[in-house]
Image: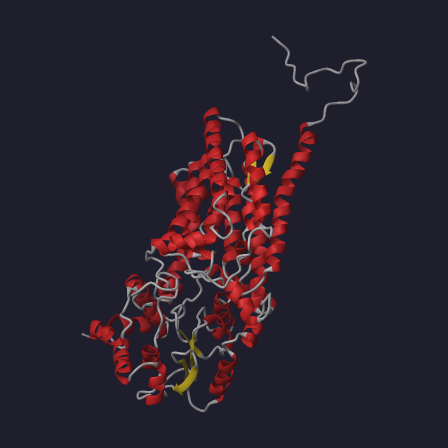
Length: 601
């Protein structure tokens, strides 16, 4: 039998240079690689923190979360307006996290939302990078690849804050990826159920992340192949909290999804507009040349993993784990294209891009991946150099660069406080004065906009439970400026049960196709016979208001308002719960006469 001739097996030869020194241990030889891998995690994470901090801000849509937070802490429940159960927050978990943080710290919830978003985004990036390094660690030296994309694309930095649920979404994605890469056969059941619980939080972070939950749970099942009892326990761990909240949502709000999903018709289709939305994200940041390079790297990793699987190589990455974020990212991107994108530039496609990048954030070092990594680094340098004109314009045909507009309008590069918005938003100076006068007025007042977006006042019916009703075109800042006991009537339906359920009759600005016209506002809140001058200013007529008032008292529309405004007794909760499916599907015509005919005949 031949003696192996590995370096560890060779004896020390007398008189040979260095013969007295023992060979370095395996851990000592790999230590420089370990340092390199630690730098691959730490350096991009730190860079993203700095980039996100420099662009810290809160947008008007981020402010929408803050009024329900203030209502919760005031004891009025998770509502936008007192006495009306409307779920205006798309990110359920983000709303409650802000409420908890504000209760614990007493800080301005806007400032807290910005800080938490930045910290959670940074932590999510760290988890994601560490998980990908762990996934490929058996290959030895790793090289940067997909990680260059978030470093080069400004929307990634912009939505690390913004006050929206994007930071929490990035953290959940990174944490879930880390937990998935740790999945292995024979692991402790408590670890399995804890990972499943985290995966199951996706719909509570944002409803469309349910597709990621499904893909990650499927990958976990494929790796573990548990018994039927184990499958049941895993699904119970993943679904317990989301299902419990869904029962609460259906019984409390009377619908199955957050109100913005109905207002924006999240189940509708506009493929061409969605394709344009993706192009307006990939094109300006020169991402198209990167797509084939990263795609080739992903294919290479899949093929390598399949070969290792056939060879039963120890420490190999699971093919299911590798494919889970790729499949989830493609499905999520397909949904964004199908629904037509969003009015906020790049925001909705970023979660899908992050998922697609996860397996290739770093890659094992080979001749091919070395060339690819070098090309990506060169692209990064070009993308952040003056060669590329900065894409910070106000808007494009279908999207709106919200941060650019907000910074310009507020005169503050980093608006992070509620007071900054309330004191400096250009549309509010006149409105603040009228709102203050309405609060002090002896009788209830309705503040509404005319066709030129000028604010006017008219009397509110005396049986109204609100002293002040104000129409909000910019819902976040209006909700921040108005007292908690005032009623903010959202013109776009994000916080209005009536406005959200208008029928979608035409496509226009993404997410802003439904506009609650003054016919309906006057029908709900104005006196029985509004002054003629107010009707003319409001762009309506007495006949239209009377038709709208009649429609509000008929059929499904009357039941809809009852589900949101009637006292929440046990019977009302049960009626809301059992009727939630039909109520979620309910739509009515935007024109009062057509609505009256359909609902009252």
